[in-house]
Image (cartoon, rainbow, N blue to C red; front, side, top):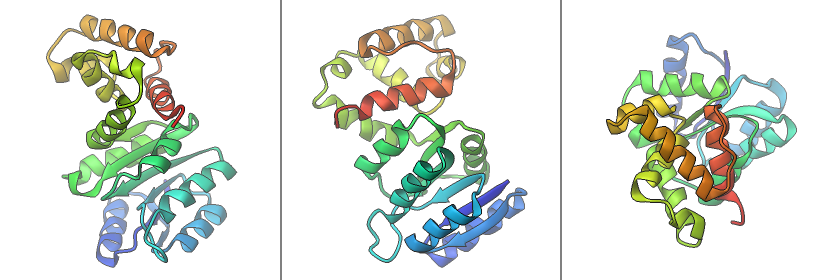
Length: 217
């Protein structure tokens, strides 16, 4: 599996390269600036891109913007964002794109190699890998001015956050220590209140919810 990696800090970039290689990933490119990332994504067509949000030369949102541009050129390009920050606007645009795997992890909340490698593989396979804090920030911002989301009960909001992380009903039930039937009921209520069509495809459910959260931003 070929990876393009974008991280401006040398030690972290080198560490990620060594970690991914240890798990049999091929590093197509490991770059440190926005322009380098743009070229690598355009020329190398990797299986997955792992990108920091803030890259030189401006250290604002080059990484995320490069990822969005690459997905416009190649719809479905799997992108895993690995950052210290949640960039609300561009994150919502990336996550609301219904084609291809997406993920958003916070650097200080990746606690072991298996967690990170599993996220890379899941995104590369077309799935999602979301940090709960990222989802919470998106939900909180949207809830402030959106009546349908505000109508969710606290339990439904909790289930929605877990859905947005890419968890199945079975996994959510195990996490909340309730029956799968109870989660199915909560899920049905969530989609009814949000006006979203229920789907058995977990990834589509996540992307549908995120698309809703992005609507009207």
